[in-house]
Amino acid sequence: MTVSDVVELEGHIIDSGLMERAFTVVMDLGGEFDIEEFEVGTTKTKESYCRMRVIADDEESLNPILHELHQSGATLAAPTDATLTPAPADNVVPDGFYSTTNHPTDVRIDGEWVGVDDIEMDCAIVVDRGGDAVTAETKVLNGIEADDLVVTGDAGIRVKPPERPRDASGPFGFMQGGVSAERPSASLIRDIAEAIAETKAQGGNVLCVAGPAVIHAGGGPALARLVREGYVDAVSAGNGFAVHDMERSMYGTSLGMDVETMEHPRKGHKHHIYTISEVIRAGGIEAAVEDGLITEGVMYECVANDRDFVLAGSIRDDGPLPDTITDAVEAQNAIREQARDADLVLMLSSLLHSVAVGNCLPSTTRTVCVDINPATVTQLLDRGSAQAVGMVTDVGTFVPMLAEELLE
Image: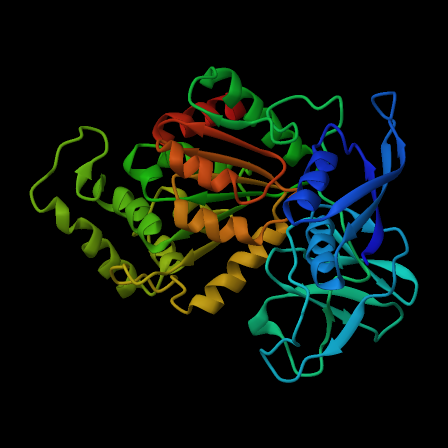
């Protein structure tokens, strides 16, 4: 005796590979499928539809198949309401809680589909029945409060992975960017500049995740210009980036190397720790700018132009600077707020911070990943964005060229 259930696939399911993935999931997990209805969209704008019965030996075998199909965007043909279970204590989720993807998601409450706010991967969904309307949002596990109504199981959840429409074009066409080590850099940078300008023209927000290599490779002045002119609204970085940037302002060096001559002045290796000491003495980055200690650079422009910045600390940090958030959970929450506001993210030579930000982004956010190491770019693109482009190149070349496209 076998058991079965019916799922539906709808949209550009052929072009985006959803249909192929669905078939593969069923077969790989030991099930079978029967196509009960199939309609192919015959124009660029018309969507396709597939109604598929999934068959397995028993419920224990069927449930994992339905779960994987659901994560890919399939929905049950006869959906039921989501199961809500109160959290037993602060920071504790109920058994079997639903762990989110980074795709847009709805939950079914009282027969109505409700969009989940602040979608982010690896979170719980909490439903609020208070107020005038039912709402749903994601919460990280350490944000769960006792008696929160947490969605458990897979019932009543609708995941909507971004699709690849048949007229996709440009560097951000559905996963078309890939990792580029050979495509003409100038034309791709021009496309990225146009995407940034378009984002700003539409009132969007651009977040830059920057590593110390941006400063060390000579891209700091160009990034500072982008901050000053409003093409970068926020900066997410670590202690090292800010130290390098302000060291350049104070001493003209980065990690002790003169960024203009590439020479190492006497005692230059101590400049970074001197910089940290002076900023601490001033009382922080904003105070150092106001006192005239820091007169140029990315951090200067952030303060002077009221651009948001988050410096997340690590166990490797010297100092650290007073502005560096050393509490890991507090830093995560600060990064999360920046990520939720971002419409386009530049990830520049910073693997660890870029992964942290990428974990907080919905799959619909445009992402640009630039690093000299192709493995870094590949790992960042694999965070799950459906609209991403990667470049394997020197960030010290990329940022000035990008600034030139936007500002000249």
